[in-house]
Image (tube, rainbow, N blue to C red; front, side):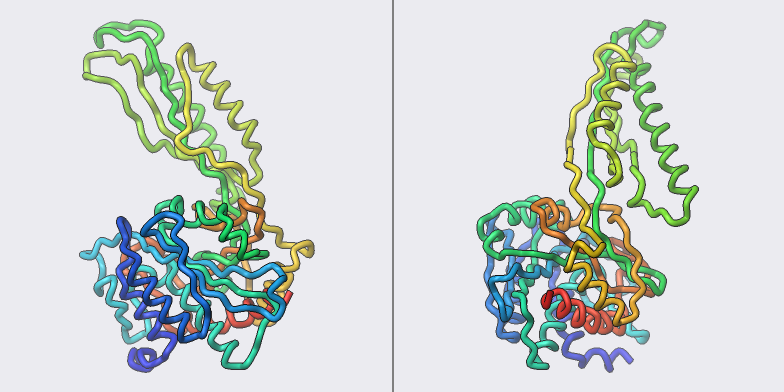
Length: 399
Ligand code: ZN
């Protein structure tokens, strides 16, 4: 069975891409650029490599549409993958081994080299049919998404080169779904990371001195953890909600103090907060200010990260690209489950400059293995994904 897939040209390209160890950290992207340039040549597409940050290439392949003045379609994927614990893998993570069931094992098989190749193979099929679409399509391959996209998509979207691409709508990664349904994402929560510094009266650990940092720290922790508890209740009480629908709060670090028998001058607690798209960010910040005041004198906070609220992409009749996406999905009888992405992807930067974007990785009946050991994708699911993109790309590019 494995050999049946090994000779499939789309699988061959997928396997070749998976074998490039573009693994964080300190990636040399040369091999990816060479591979993608070869792909562009085989498709007869122009290729441009932008280096907004040196050694962090952004590769863009372009297929001109019949009406190149119309806003274009961006098909984005990232070239990098997360690290591996090789000992925990059944097959070497950059071997792209195909087993007897047709499972292709590799880091990046789900997240998200599959999608990058599926875009290209869908375009190859459309070209083979002699189709030319109305809108220009740009297929972008970006670096460093797995470390926040700061030297990749985040910087690229504000360049004149990006503006010149005249993007009207973008597709980017989603996530596998263990059921029949396909999950699509139209928004992301705002990431805030807060350090709360609690200062107080220092002294000997044998006394009961007033106004200590520890008492204030406890007050702060209670407030954040109470809110965490509330959000957990909301999530647990409604089976329709997913983690992306609520605000998550986690205490991720505590630091301070100098010695076990010395009451410290200062203790700090860090919270990682993902604010639901329905939350009022100003109100939340005012509440944190209030908690700090209530905790006592000398309690302050600072942000390690404070991301703004980014508007979700509309999934109604006001968004013609969505209508086109949905009608292609309906024609294919795909069951779609719309969600808010639990983590962060490059889509937030694209949406942040006002471009509607949908996160979609066509992998149903597939366990969610992104960032996990033994990440795999079944060959038949991968190939069906090409059929799906063929229809969706044609539909959105003909809006
Ligand atoms: Zn990803």
